[in-house]
Image (tube, rainbow, N blue to C red):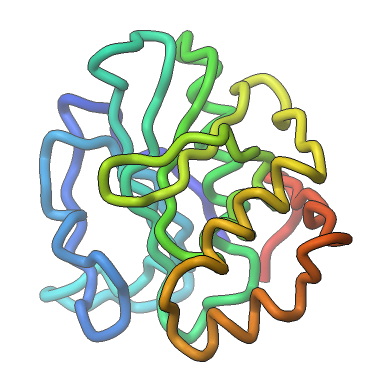
Length: 193
């Protein structure tokens, strides 16, 4: 597996992801965002789609905070979800953002699965929500965020207040509101299979 930043905004490259296999596939044809990918170099790619991509992240600078990078969209191919590819790719990108002078990275998530995955990438809940009811997570680019259990549980509680699909409700029930602790960190440098 190969992790690469394909380009930084505003000169971001485009990706042609198969919409049947990737959530948010259409967001990766935008040229205003940077892109990072996890590729399988042994996979053949056809002319229509970038079939060697297993995971991708689109990102850009925060317009109001020049020291912050926003991760806009994270997607993992449907047959590779749950393998840790999304959080590892995000952690990889955040480390590269430090080299470009960004001090922190942010992402807004709209479901408990993404919330948990980004915690595994070293992000922590800020206590803020966007106008679209997404929870805002943040981390310094040079190290994982401070991740107090109380803040983690607060984010889970906010999802519990929502009308969620059955799988998301079961996911939350497996994390008791009084005792849930943040998940273990995944290393961006761990070998991938």
